Length: 451
Image (cartoon, rainbow, N blue to C red; front, side, top):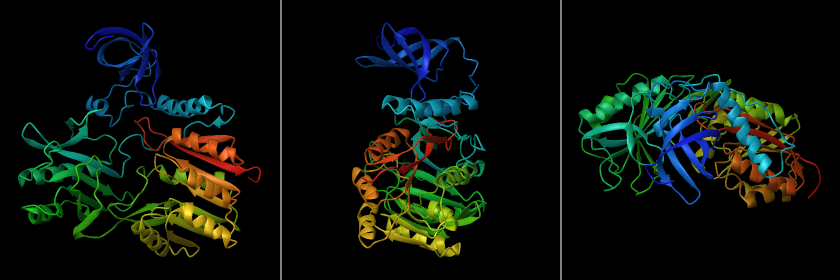
């Protein structure tokens, strides 16, 4: 296959990135936005040694599972790269994704439950981080085209809470009217790099964060005065990110106006959320995720649980009423402070939070005779380190409750726990990100022998 060549291909599968998979003369072709069962004419965009990437030129035979997407930009950007697939089939795809990963490492005896559907299939996100760039001489917000840094301007982000979209557009217009220059990543100049908007779905409180190259810029005070008049806005921050990097947020946040936190709820618990707080994106599904994890853990009122990667305390505080004690561990000191504060707000007295690495603190607690019954882990996409797994096992918990946002690293880590005497018989996918290929999973690993 050669670049720009038009090929006819039958789509037989979906890749983990939700691209259609087909074959031409023994070579694999990944076709954007194509679905299994379809026959398409596709234009080759890029070739590698044994595979190629392509885009649809014409659908010859259409899948009955295809959905008409209101804006093609959703598919172009990867903002909602599964939006063209019926929702029940999205759930099946996510279940199959996990099953295939287990099968590859000969763990197909582990049952993969049906994916827990999200109550909301669009407009579910309580946080948006959108790039700000100049397009055709005009400041725009939008999303990057897949596998590029070309901004596709958008006014409707589909998966965002509608109030967040309203605020994004209002702030965009304020920046335009005040002639604030958008960031130019090639020249590393300009001012506003990203807009972040967070909304407490239960409270309606909105936080606006201007992610900027500099700590201040001409006209900033006027911009702030205008943003604070937007209905619902309770807090305005400037996040300073001076580095030439793809990382969205810098390390320093400056309160420009209003509250230092906004409030939201998970179940009957209230949480204060600051600019850098980790808080699950899908507010309607989060209580269902945590309830599933807590139920599968089979907690007892005599249990001491460790909430590793505890963040602002969402999981540990949700589990606190079922157990004797919660010990949360988190490397980010500001998050530890927030977790302690959230325990106080909710009048939870059996949860304590510690700054540091769980792999350092847990063995010290074990040496002092403290027995850990259950460890909850909700790590970032890279999963757990071998050092953490070693330390966790040494503390001798009966159960490891693993909440994962990346099934590939979950399966890798499950194997390491199994080598050390833990086992599981089921994995439960949870759809936290409808219209995208991403899937959250819950599994409980139980100790079967002493290492």
